[in-house]
Picture 1 (tube, helix red, strand yellow):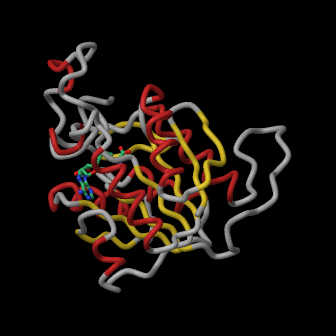
Picture 2 (cartoon, rainbow, N blue to C red):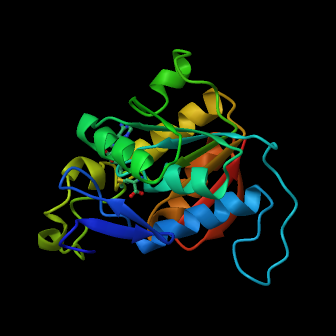
Length: 216
Ligand SMILES: C[S@@+](CC[C@H](N)C(=O)[O-])C[C@H]1O[C@@H](n2cnc3c(N)ncnc32)[C@H](O)[C@@H]1O
């Protein structure tokens, strides 16, 4: 992180950060790679593009946007996408909106608990949901809580071994029949998430580092 300007690089762009948002992590960049794969765009030089799975002009919703790093990067890499970003933290949404302006990325930010605003019809039903929700359990004994203390607890911790919000989101994705879901979680949680998603009727498609991709 650049301490003087309080910015952090994510996917080759500088994002403004503050104590109100999670500092973007390198492992989250693989979520962007997975989105590009679904859009049929090569994400590594020398790699053939894959068959496009998403529609030509996809609607993509980033749930728990924090600094906006995921939503904004998707808009920059896929300008043809209509991108929405939600969070429960008003302060985080302000940082996301500021980053969108600084990086000239026209996205829509809105406060919502998970998919509440999609259910109400305030937001359109997206083709793809991407989410790096809080997935850390406070009781994990390998945590260095001191190093995490500068980031908001609401951005880090979740109950039920870190899976509470992820499970809730999976349930909502199924209810709303949203076609594609890309999640970030610690690899130690992947098996439990895959089992739960299967029980809820989602199909596991691919894993990439911390990232899991499901279709409905
Ligand atoms: C792990 S941070 C991820 C931030 C950003 N997407 C990133 O990857 O750097 C999780 C974000 O989810 C938000 N959040 C927590 N509970 C939520 C909920 N119930 N619905 C929507 N967002 C939530 C937090 O405020 C936080 O900004």
